[in-house]
Length: 130
Image (tube, rainbow, N blue to C red; front, side):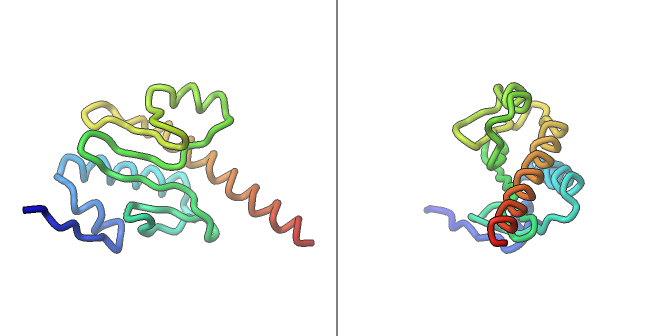
């Protein structure tokens, strides 16, 4: 019998759907993102934890059986790309294995880089409209 998956409507519900040891890691990822982007709005998007900044997508994270995924990860920054090399799993995706230390400092840096990108794109749009 196939188990029916319940769609979470909040990040609390999303995290609660995992085993306790994974919940703890997801909560730490959540806290790291919230500290790095205190003005971001938290919610669910694409059925995973999502954060928006001024209405624009900022970052998403998701739990899986063997890893925690973070999306999108920036491209075009050599320093971040070097640090992400061991976690890269395709364009715009990082996978942090469960059972190994999660690089919270790297997650913090990724969120801050994404914030700069989102804010720069918004400023460019505003400038274009004038």
